[in-house]
Length: 413
Image 1 (cartoon, rainbow, N blue to C red):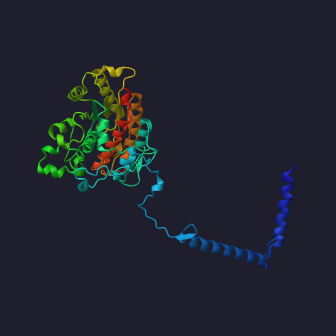
Image 2: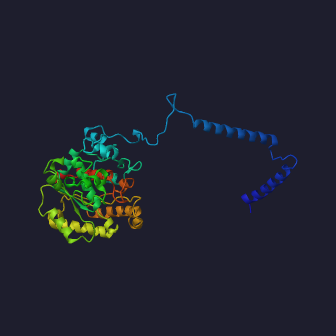
Image 3: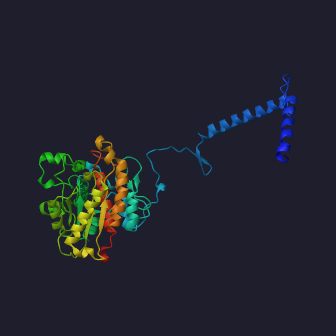
């Protein structure tokens, strides 16, 4: 054959012949290159490598240059420069986000909690519920128990006065769920009572032992302070009205504990009574939380939610109307912590919790219920038992819910 193959065979043979001719044992000679030139090329290569090594070694210790001057910069692993995130908008509305709103709260110094320890403010601020819920659900912390930051846009850290005004827009705020949701009510009461020491619990009837066991962080310890938690603001107003910072008669926040499906009849009857059967002059906001008591069984959670929604419609038929204003939020469970018992790691561990959170978001959305995920917020938050977050984590969760309530278009309905 002709072409490349005819050319290649004689050329290859010629190359082998020349190689045998140019290589001899006496002089170690290669075609066209003497031993002397080989030695000089090798020496130049060694010098080049050595010079490069010296240069790299030296610049690793060279101070940073600023404007022609030498300045040695130290590295602090615990410092995060302000330039990493844009500062909050310079308007009065965002000023509380930049200061400790707990200044003036009871037991502020003893409990050693600042609002600036819980939330790191930045701009821009979220302007609608969809972006807000996405930001709060997918945010994170820069280290264990560091201040929480939503993703892409920020949430507010409201003052107590602002929280009272937001809650007063509603006839009622009804929280439905388990102990995690009871802690949401407790945290809201901490904020409304301006009391970090005992704001979440019924301290007006405490024994000396309870005052010791249910103080500061321990208010949310389910082993020692479960029954002492506040279930509704009406109890505070009745038993300790002077501790309530909101104007009396303007705020009604409560929880109905409905922890498992099937829902016991007495729990459902109590819920229906709380909802009432007449259309109020202001809307009722519902906040749901469920999952662990049914072992993160998605179908059980969907059935639990459907049963509550059906019961609400039966009590308040106007909610079945096409354009009825019915604010509803589903809050999925916390991330699991190191103290989570081993027997629950498979069914209630972090993989199962993450999958559950995403699935509930879809199923809730199909029912017109909005969703707030808390896995990202709680994965680096301190927990008592691998399940329940402490005072700090619960205050962040409560403030997330207040942000959602704030963006509901109440004035349009």
